[in-house]
Amino acid sequence: MLMQISETKAILDSGEFEKFVGEVEDQHFECKGAPYRLENNLQKQELAKDVAGFANADGGVIVIGLSTEKSATSFGEKVSKVRPFSSDLFSPKQYRDILRTWLYPNVTGLDIEWYPSTRDRAVGMAALIVPPQHQSLHPFLLTRYITEGEKGTEIVFGYVQRRIDEVQPYTVQNIHALMSQGISNDFVSQRLEALEALSYGVMNRLQLIQFPMEEITERGKGIVEESKEQVKQEMDKQTMFRIDQAIAEVNITDKPAYILYAYPIVKTSVPDLFAKRTSEITSLLRDPPKLRSHGFGLDTGDEPRIVAGQLRRAKSVGNSIIEFWRDGFLIFIASGGDDFLWWGRRKRIQGGMRINPIALAESVFLFCELSRRLFRHAVPISPPMNIGLSMRNLIFDNIFCGLSPYEVGSGSWEFSDNFKRPPEPKVTTEARWESGEINAPKLAFVLVSGLYEWYGFEHEVIPYTAKEGDYTIIDPKALEVL
Image 1 (cartoon, rainbow, N blue to C red):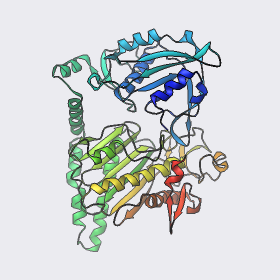
Image 2 (cartoon, rainbow, N blue to C red):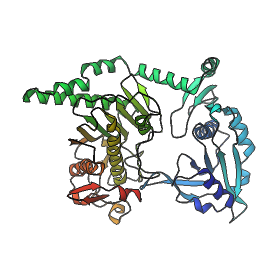
Image 3 (tube, rainbow, N blue to C red):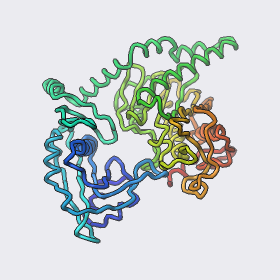
Image 4 (cartoon, helix red, strand yellow):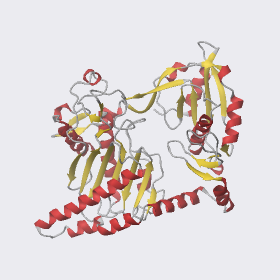
């Protein structure tokens, strides 16, 4: 369950801090192992970013005095230890003074307190409680921005929202010019979309003209058998081009990449893709299906923006991206490293890192479920399509990405039994869905089993599966209860 602000406040007031152990950080709850080192400008900036992130979202609590660690079963840092400290190490006034200097406008209702422990009232924890802010106050901006190694601070404005890693700085002159026009958040968003469309580049447009998907699929009708292979090659080329561009957008070209994609094999359109921000399509891209709190989902934390009149894109640079094109091409890409696919264990095993089987099974199932829901809005509805799972740079910086066929937490998992290396640095496994709505559990198993086969494992050892009639499926019920 997600930690609500009121629940966090209740534990703080009680002084029974051990209740935090096992909770997972989320959009309303962030932990710090020790007070910010406020003699350091980078730490002042970090404080301002953390508070602004909650203020620009819908509020939250920063608790100081809790250590966290990665858990293989949850996508988020889990509280592992309580670390109370003396009130002498925490000055609410100092925190307020810094935030007044580094943030604009002031955050209303900000509560900064130290809470004594019931076990020893000489020590305790501190918290910054950021309530939801009235929309008229948005956005909350950093009034200065520095990078590591800089001794001074340049006066700029930076915008940051919880779950978005990137802060784009603007000079005071930029912001003043925008404000003098009576700037609104919607206007800013529209300008950002326009800039993103321009940055997409002339080369991309030429590529799109060169082999648009709808023309390729149309040409596939009624052509002689020997020409079909040429059409397929062009479709494959288009697929790789779009995936390459998406990988470049999140800056993981030279890093392990985890890719899920789907595209119709007949001429398809998504007429309502750009209709409005509140459409079901946009809502699904903004908030994709999920099985549980803190699961390994497809959410990027970004607003799905229109790019070059061709697609909607939501991204978190360095982490993940989701794209849905007007011709029905769907892509999700995430880090193939310890930010997603390797999540949970940083220690190397026989010189390699291990794919988290929960992250794999859950994300593939959710992608198939997202595809099912999105293609209800396609014309034709639920067209036949190819759906694929791909991984790149499985051997990276002398580290390889291995796999073992066990549930997380089992004895064999803990002792890294039957751990296998990738046969090659990259792999793609693809499935065809011929007609009707996608059966997400069934299709997810086809994709996941293809990866296990590639590593050299039989289907019977794949975890988080179940039998459904004559078919094996990825079992969403087994994942929901983790």
